Length: 331
Image (tube, rainbow, N blue to C red; front, side, top):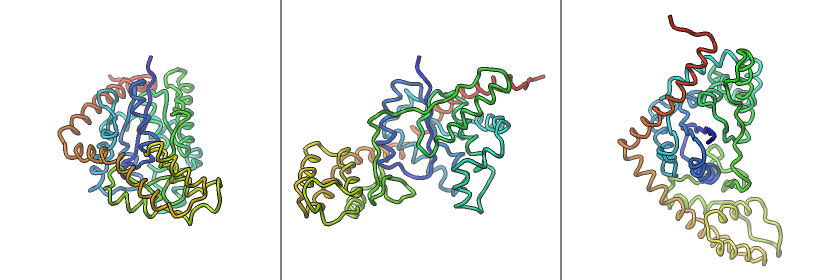
């Protein structure tokens, strides 16, 4: 029997190489093996008060990128969070299982409240409950999570267990982290840091034009070259090699590894040129698909309508049973 897997992304910007190799290529494989729900978390984005003029555009961008990267609406349930109103009601009901003290102690809440003291809203405080709702409304078995979301998943398990215990039922599944595999690829940033990300400003986006990619790679942090043979690479050089190993042919990687090992200098320009060319080779077909999909509103309407129908069928079943368990009955 297939297990249910759920994953969501906030529509706050375009997807980058780190998103693609870190998760999306795995999701494409996953949808052939599991019952997958992938959603655009537009309600989650409201905690930061996004520009109303851009919210729909951002949703459209991320959805188009998901589809262009290989997520298949015939194999998976792909939907926009706000198209499933059952989520809002279960969110309300699960809030009754959440306590102020535990919500105030979450790392993400404390961090965001510290950085934005003038925007400590109730949605931010109960963010873990909405995340739990997204998971529990489909009774997901697995959730792919990053390190910064492990606490939220543990809280989801707590709410599920608390509900089951309070009402003496074995209803909610206790979700577990989905391990994407031993060979999970982590794409580093171009600025020498260990992470490629939007907030870090060091990302190469799937929609970047070739000239933009060339400029970004050219500006990547380097030095004067190795100062001897077979020395360990500094992190910022290792980062370039990590990306090279993902996008380039093995003989290309071997060529530059040999230059490093022999202690040769004055070849970083060549490395960056080759790296940019190979990134462009990978991203150009994806970028073209993204632009084609974004221009096809009829297709996007079909995908989101189909996804909403499938997601609502699952959500309505869960909500109906929760209401019955909690004692809500119609006259």
